[in-house]
Length: 198
Ligand SMILES: Cc1cc2nc3c(=O)[nH]c(=O)nc-3n(C[C@H](O)[C@H](O)[C@H](O)COP(=O)(O)O)c2cc1C
Image 1: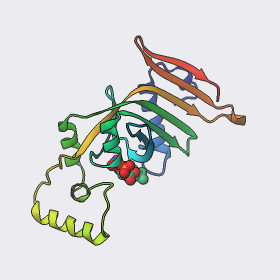
Image 2: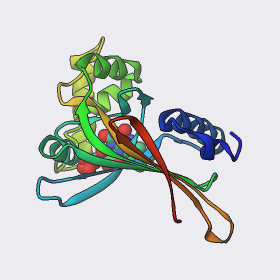
Image 3: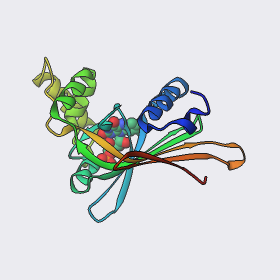
Image 4: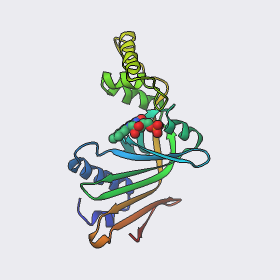
């Protein structure tokens, strides 16, 4: 994309799509890896990487285990934030809003699009709970392999989520630390755009 696109853009989702394409071309791997911040009901924050699998009119979609720390926090406090950083492009995108669960058909479709090994791994993992040993996990995978020689059913706890954006900020490295920052804020009339001091 040209350098002026970010200055002209009025639709942050379309602009994000352009930046994501640039990142996919430039990054070594996992251009869709994003830091996801959640918090408890009391506001104690936690952050970890997830893969953002799709962006559409609903928002930014990812998949995880509902029983994990992030899953529990989202169940009690749907407010969340994401931060992409594409090192090779020197760009950052920050998104915040509230998270909703995706319909089970989305989770089914994505779960079954993954490799059998990934499906087994997801089915075997009580994500974020204490695990006695690596052997116990490997044993569990073997048991599931025998139990399900055909299709592996999606475990109910393995779900899709969507972060519905209310604020999206684009940051682009500038010479002499004069970086460009554009903040899009959702209001009644649609997206408002403002330039921020770096
Ligand atoms: C690049 C990268 C991508 C990841 N993608 C996911 C993902 O899409 N879903 C997921 O549940 N965990 C993913 N993980 C693992 C999480 O970072 C984390 O360890 C796990 O989800 C447990 O987090 P929690 O205990 O905060 O819930 C990824 C880790 C890395 C480093």
